[in-house]
Amino acid sequence: MNISLVMMGLTDMKDDFRCISGYDMKQKRYYRPLLTNSRIDHNFCTQPSREIKLFKEAVYEVESSFDKPAPHSEDFYIRRLIKVREIFKNNEEIKDFLHKISDPSIRSVYGDFIENVNGHQVVPKDCGLRSLGTIIARRCEVYKDDRGRVRVNITDQTGHELKNLPCVAHDMEYKKEGEYNDIPIRLGLTRLWKKDDMEEAFYWIQISEVFPF
Image (cartoon, rainbow, N blue to C red; front, side):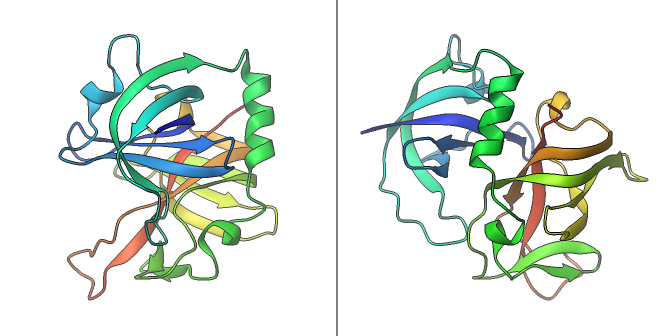
C-alpha cells in the first residue's frame, strides 16, 4: 500500500535527525512518516531525485496501519520513500491550499487542554486531540530570545494567544523574524518530555513553520 502526502513539515531535531509530516488530500488529514528500525535524518530527506521539500508531493510505501493513539495519531511507519514531485505552480496556489486545509482555531487542533507551565505552552499527558494542524493567525510575531533561539507569539482568529513558542523549521525561509497578519502557521506537538526542573512530563507546543506568503 502506498500513500501520497503533500509535505507540510520538515523540522530539526537533535543532531542530524529530522521530523517530517504531510497532508493527505484524499483523506483530508495529516500524517507523520516514521521508520521502523531507524530514524529519519538528513540523508533520508536529501536522497538524489527524491529530496523532501515543503509543498512537494511525496509517495511512501506503507509499513503499518494507521491506528496510533492521540495526540500523535498521525504516526505511521513506512518501508521507503518512492518518489517526490512538484504539484504547485506558484506561491498563490500554495497559499490557497493552506487556507483551504486550515483549522479554525488553536483549540480545534489541541482541544481545551493547553496549560501554561513556567511560561511554556504545554498539553498534559494523555490529553490533546492531535499533534499537527495549520491555522491562519490573525497576528504573528517571530523573534529571537536572549539566547538567539527563534520564538513565536501567535493569536488565532478567535483571539486565543500563545506566546514564547519555539520554531523548529529546518528551512530559514519559514522562520523569518518579523510581524505578520493573517498568515498561515503550522502547529506541532513534541513527544512526552520532562524538563529537569519539573515533576511532570508534558507534550510541548511548537511552531513547525511560519509561511510568509
